[in-house]
Amino acid sequence: PSVSIAGMPGVVSTDFGVFNRSQSSYIGLSGLPYSRVVKPCVPGGLPSPRRRCSLRCGVIHRVGMKPVMAASAVAPVAVPYLDCNGTTPVYDEVRAAMLPCLDASGFGNPSSGHVYGANAKRKVDNARSQVASLLECDANDVVFTSCGTEADTHAIWGAAFRAKGAFHVDVPHVVATTAEHPAVIETLKMYEQLGILKYTLAPVTNEGNADPATVAECITTSTCLVTCMHANNEVGALTDIAAVSQACRQRAEEMKLPEGQLLIHTDAAQSVGKVPVSVKAMGVDMLTVVGHKFGAPKGIAALVVVGDELHEGPKRLVPLLSGGSQERG
Image (cartoon, rainbow, N blue to C red; front, side, top):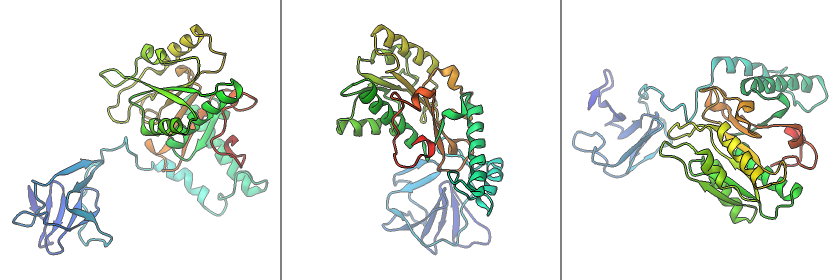
């Protein structure tokens, strides 16, 4: 159905967005303008209902239409935002806390020894403590990253090369589930192709969560890491990570794996801020948290790495990035 917009002749509002007959332009639910490149309209000038379209994350994509660079004079339609699993708006409290870091007194490098650096370091340390309080872990265990993919990759890379060096495993093995985020599965595929590791994907239940016994059965003598997401990003299924951790550690004992060889990681990007998440209660060695999923801006996440042994010494988690010493790199 379509409705004419008062004061804007030739412009109509549809279920999918706004169409301007005079400009032959179309604005989807995202507010992005589209131009006609083939005949996408039925008599009357509206997008054809017969043409395929997919609605995902509040954005409409139509066959035969492409984004155009020029801004349209038509104002986008106001629609409810229903994709907080994709990202969230920046919360007012977050914006207020960040603004001082962008002004003339708060822009310093936290690694610098002067007053500007010291001021910035205090803010970073405070943020680290706040994350630790939220997740019930030690502040020293919070390693900031740029995104969830980096955090997940750090966990996989670090565990694999830790197994190679500290436990002399030639080809480390990783267990994940078929429901993991591409940040995990695609990384495992790439590392296997490079000969860095091998991996097994444990099937999930009909509800989409992981069965602890099924995951544990996949562990071999060369397994260095079990990674299992807490809340699924597509269907929202919650997995009992504490039960997975317990089952996997029991399996490692039965197989007489060297103490400390097996690490447990969970990607909690979709659960933090929505349900209670406790690193201690879950019994994991590593946990991924992503800021923009619950009110922070894009570009900030963290990998929680539990315990001094994983930060220092021969059994430390091998850093993903080398060079600077920030975030224990």
